[in-house]
Length: 452
Image (cartoon, rainbow, N blue to C red):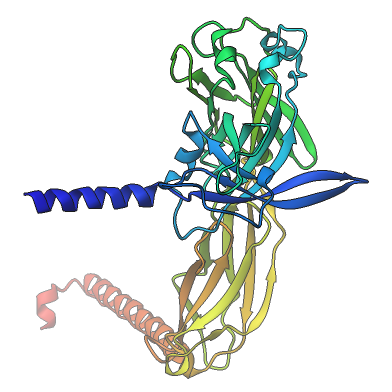
């Protein structure tokens, strides 16, 4: 059993190593150079390291090579499930100055007249974005680089705000759940003991920006008896600390729920967590979508005679959103020798039709060219491409029947009509003759049997 236990231990160690995520995050330090210009310097965050000393980074200034202490574990947890084959996230660092929230509803978070001494020192804000998650974290930096074999600066993650749905795609009319998590650890032990045990009050703010306009969607200060602005658009937030440890670290939730989203609700959503003199913010990009329904008329068959054009085909593309980016292509499948080609003919699109739910519809028209006998059995198809559909799009098709090759031809139809007309006339004539004979028999007073 010992070899098996050893193998299991090695396997668990490998899984842990794989799931731990990247050890170093490459960043850019962005600073204001004056005159509307920005400067960028390379930087790096060392989230974890193996045995021994940190790896040397002679390409970085010591102040920009940061060994991050993450007492709440929020940064490391965000990267733990980061796919190994995914592109590296974009990371930026910038200087940060603690300041009180300016909104009236958040004034209760900062009853002090000035920023407490526990927040003195150098602060940096790190912003990390990727299709997997987005986060911002406030780092309190030690004043001097540590004289280790590799010069490195120590920093502590104090407030981290994180979302795992940075680019939500919500179906039109369905509810949207915009997740938000945050973690906080007082920057110093003195700061922690100077406050009442347990997590501090916090403020949650969700703002919506779209087409150059923005407004406050929802605000909350759990634990404070402040007058809150009325939420808009039916928004509800799940705002609370998840734990009540006496001295931290603490984690919390600020997830936003929007019922039955409409097109006007797409855009940027800015989520901000306010603590006394500290703010962390992430941005989510909400997109509303609805895939189109596709149908083709006339269906299921299109009839035409050799040398004549089939009737006009209409492809109905209905109830989709957004209206931009829709493409319609016409195809002729299974023509001569089973070929696949673009259908020839005159084509055009109708104007958009708007519906009460915000979706739109249009019709694509095709007037095909005259067909020949070899096109019998081919299929006309309209294929629709839209950002809400898979790469191959969505299609509908009808079968082309050339008269005279299957079923009755046009001439056969005319002949059948004439035959039926003559047969009906003959039946009526026989009925008239029978009625006449019966009338004569009655007049002569002879029984019908005597006619034999």
